Length: 321
Image (cartoon, rainbow, N blue to C red; front, side, top):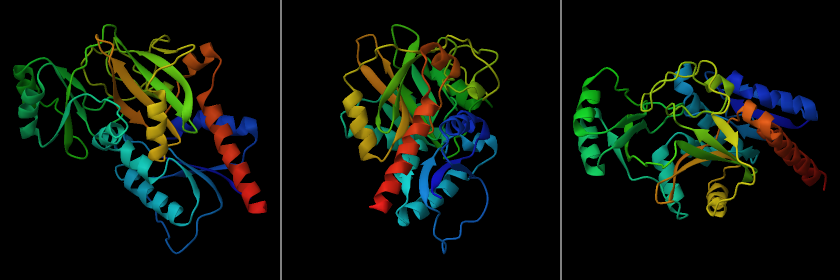
């Protein structure tokens, strides 16, 4: 019997999806991708495959999980299986440079950024961008490597300290700081490639913006500090689903997702003091905040489960025809 297959490397993030599948009654199986063997001589099972591989997998000891997932996705796609968030989605998940170039093709503005390979090139890149600047990792998630630095002296001090984190792929992004009139960003969720809802995220306590319970911060650090990931809970109102949200970029974001084979994603943007929106991150293994959803009466994971169930049904009808 065909079923839904969930490709991932973090059990905690899949718990709400398990519950949603159980409620709907959809058969599913999890493929935990870390180490193992992939027999390219065999054919994959029938079903719909949902890729939730994370750019931050190396922080959980799964250094080569994205590469392993890439091999699995290539195998699935070669055999014509239905994949939600396939190889192209994975390529964008693990590279903000790739994200920004893909977004630009659809007229979606991203902050001015220089990709510096090697610590010794960061300071010159910061001078070229102008201060204040944000440093962040190209392959990131969970606020990895994020620092707000106000001057060249601050950059030099940070680079000379043990606090500077070498990115897993060697690429540090040096980015223009977008100053918003209020301390929040907006995360726009898409399911089946279509707008689902938007979340306003309070950034007053820093850059750790992952919505999942397991990714909240227990003791808040000052804005600009990088966070160690993922202990316990954040203030309950940090995430708030925006009632009646609309934005002129929604059609462009949807075209971008369709062109890059992304079915499920959270896209984050910030609005500057002049009212201009800057898109700065695409999360293809998106999570949802349970407190915010409970207050709004919504469930992103149930919507994903229903979407995968519809794809399974469509697949069954096509084979029966």
